[in-house]
Amino acid sequence: MAPRLPALETFPPLRAWQRKAMVEYLRRRTEDFTAVATPGAGKTTFALRIAAELLVDGTVEAVTVVAPTEHLKTQWAQAAARVGIQLDSAFRNADLHSAADFHGAVVTYAQVGMAPQVHRRRTMTRRTLVILDEIHHAGDSRSWGDGVKNAFEPAVRRLMLTGTPFRSDDNPIPFVTYERGGDGLLRSRADSVYGYSDALRDGVVRPVLFLAYSGETRWRTNAGDELAARLGEPMTQDLIAQAWRTALDPAGDWMPQVLRAADARLTVLRNAGMADAGGLIIASDQQNARSYAKLIEQVTGEKATVVLSDDQGASARIATFAASEQRWLVAVRMVSEGVDIPRLAVGVYATSASTPLYFAQAIGRFVRARRPGETASVFVPSVPHLLGLASEMEAERDHVLGKPKDREGFDDDLLERAQRDEQASGELEKRFTALSATAELDQVIFDGASFGTAAQAGTPEEEEYLGLPGLLTADQVSLLLTKRQADQLAAQRRRTAVQAAEPAAAAPAAPAVPLSAAQRRVALRRQLNALVAARHHRTGLPHGKIHAELRRLCGGPPSAQATIEQLEERIATVQTL
Image (tube, rainbow, N blue to C red; front, side):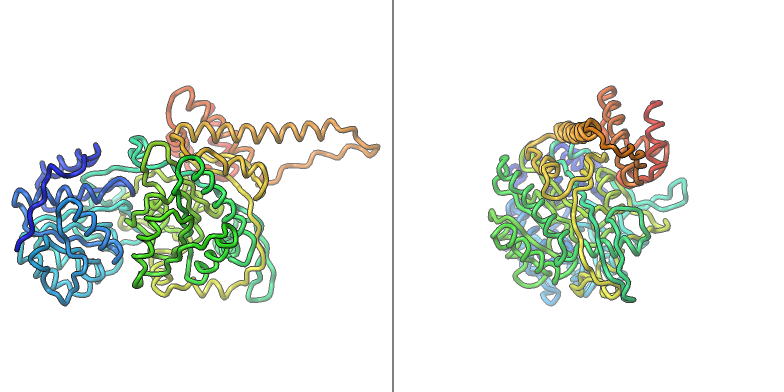
């Protein structure tokens, strides 16, 4: 028996961007439509409303949803059932056709890639709407891309969804429109765009604070040489990678110190009104994930949920955690884009994966807002590339074909291989042995600006930032961070004045010690932030927009990773605006 058509009047109210995108979709009535919306904005609800509209008016008879993972198949089917659309999440390629009491099925990109002819026949049998969730996955490999194209070319309608429409490679994404720009490069074009900055303004997503931790690291090379470096300082890519890996070593002091800080922040959020707030540690591999879980248990006295791969039982563990009040979840791969755990509010980015795509997907797990004032806090290593990505949280990117790629950390291919094997990059591990690492809070990044000066882990200065109230608007976050930084600087000036006032010994006064490069960068960052804050109060422009304008005028990376010369140039420029 054919399933009953969904009742449009029972759908939940749409957000403004969803209504606008739906009107645009129904007005165009084109075969292909691409909607880009930041994680947490409600892409699933939008797509299901489009599906219901097309089912009710007879444009389509069936719906196929293509999702990245097995867990998301279940999530899609459950969301669809709540609005009267029955989708078979247990469909297998060997089934050939869905049962008659379903409107359609949910499958994965891998399923389609293995047997595109099965899905092509299904698509040709009934007029079908295909919803391609996180469509950039169709560019992961030639077999997936070719399979999706072959399987769904006969579809009456195709709706492409993504929260991260960019990739680090040149694999074109099927059914996505590319347009050539003035520089001759092809860029993806979306029919509807709802970015993080738009969602933040509307209160749909949470403000995200990035707490960047630096520290001293020591390791031994395969030649027996011992090296030391401060995480976050300018270094070659090889040294950055090895210092980064040393910091993430569970046997060192960096990870325990950062996990204590993250758990303290989680406690603040829980006491401030987010009673069920949860934390997520994103690990590079199985071994580290298990070790981090043991560290969390030592810190909190409570076991963490560990999800290692897309294996049997992983979806159930994620669902159990999502519905509980347990504090911590540790994952390697499973808790990625689209996984819906709205109570996640604190993250620890303990992986060496650093492509913009992966970073955006990871941070997207923490931005979903449930009520006004909720904030998210993500702890990251003070690595220049990560700091740049954190500073550009609100940037909107397209998929660009033919552009030279700047590879840092793992690229997409290496990351996919590492995740598939569930091992960290063995090649890098052979090059060194981690010896020790200590952590200190380097800076807090919010709205493109950097706040604070170095604070040792466990000190009152660090606690001032960890203790920021949990329920704040974006403007209140900026004001409080500015005040915290001002208080921190005032305390430093008082200490300096006291030291200067102490009677000098008979020995002649020591000459002034010149500032190190790191100290100069911190001082210049403070000066730049103060000038940007002053301009914000004069003009009402957000801090992030002022920083972006300075970058446009002066060039260079975000201030968190800018050189001394670049900071000096921006200071001179903002004084003339």
